[in-house]
Image 1 (tube, rainbow, N blue to C red):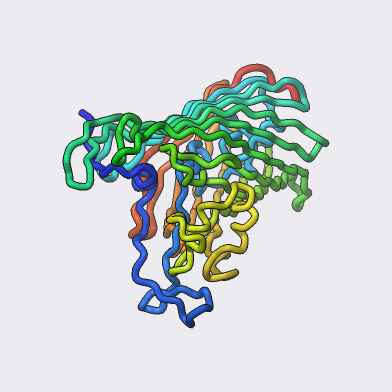
Image 2 (cartoon, rainbow, N blue to C red):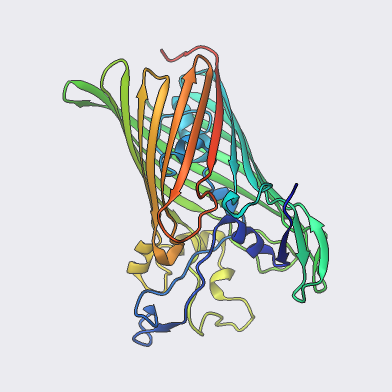
Length: 406
């Protein structure tokens, strides 16, 4: 039986509330006045979380990466590579591969009908080129809409999806690039109204641009492989659920990652990987001077996509120290025995003023012939609730065709 969820009819917050629990700003003051340094009354930095529309695009759908603290920008390639860095596909070793991932959402709250499903795959054209395709579908379950007075406005099953294609190419033996155009559709409350304004599905176009450098490294008497990757994801148009010109940013993100794979012998390999991510969208303005043209829309929301992206490195009210607090860190470990059994662990953290998500992850992987199976489990380390608290998610992978690079 579906669990009915009553949510007031407010478009972006619907998606945000189901993505993560936001920290409510305590009363903040600028100290000293005019400094841009905003603090709470207890002297701690003011909470100023960056919020975007369609946050489901930032959910890591791959159970392998999910078991490694959401690391994935520079990992070895598989059928889920285009979720974080499509350029990894240029280094695949199988001709064809597909994967299906299921991620339950908010199960700790007793919800059974909220989930993320991800279907992806690739086809190797030749030793230099690979194409990929993916479908990301986010179901928000059955929701009972109400107005501000608590009057029922009917029910619906909001959902969002992304369709993406990818092209990856080797430019040299060690360096590869990837390009991933995508179509984004977000239907949160279609058919409902906000006063006299009709609500429609939000539509946006975006693209990912990525690159990876892979080189062998001699380590003692063993072979190892160092990978360094970078990806700008969800670079695209703003999105709106009405005809208003006040549109919302999608979660454009810059990610940098590295992975070092050690081949101890023919049976044992060990990988350590780390990622750093930063949203390339404006930091919310604090204070009374956020709408200089007095049009009812805060200035930071009126920037163009590219202007906001470039300005995101220097627009935090608290200056450079707050910009550094906007970085998100991941580290992951992976051990494979005989390329058949894997054990994984990881840790993810972000600053308490920017979302306060911190958690450990663990998981295992199994592979037999063409079939692979990955599991991951998230263990929270703060009081900030995570939608994946104590939740098991899994990916199925199928590799077809010969290993044409060997």
